Length: 266
Image 1 (cartoon, helix red, strand yellow):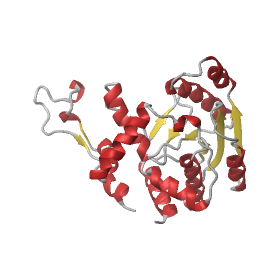
Image 2: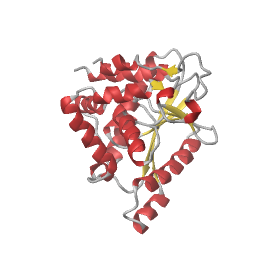
Image 3: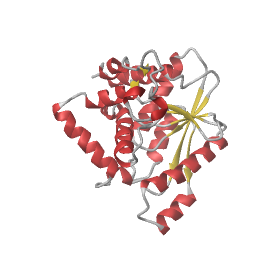
């Protein structure tokens, strides 16, 4: 399997479809140390050479005290690609780890988000790229449905509250199978976060459930992701989108069914 070709095609399709990158953008790539964010960085660099627009890329890592080894090998690799990389130690996160060692993912995420925005300002960037994959989008949708009662997931593109940063997720169509295969084929160093190995979490439970479903139904992930772009408002229960008075001539459907072949094609 040509992992690089698949990675570039699917990331390129996401960038084009959601207008993730625009002329003159300076993109700060959030490198977590894992396979997904490093694969995303390389994809952006390769696409940068082919793009009809000009944009620049830098990378950063937030040290929250949870890496299982030194992150420096990842940084050295990024610098070998000719990319500016900086590792920022977030002292509030370190204090949180000392004072509340059993804190949940949501609190850690809030601390990280604050640090990310601060770093992006210091780097003089206007776009922040995160390495969430198709797997993360599917898990987010199911987690919100089952545990928060909301029909929502991760956005492919969104904005920070003050509209000073555009937040993009170029790997929305890329599965972890592809990012794993890519970094292994290239010998890219990765340093996982200890949280990624935790068992008994909601995220891990959902991930294992999807894997079990796929034993009998191989395209479950693709179908879940395709459904996010194929919304039939009138078949849900939100009265804001239901034609209670029969005034609409036909049901409005926001369709994204063309996503399915993009996801399935290898």
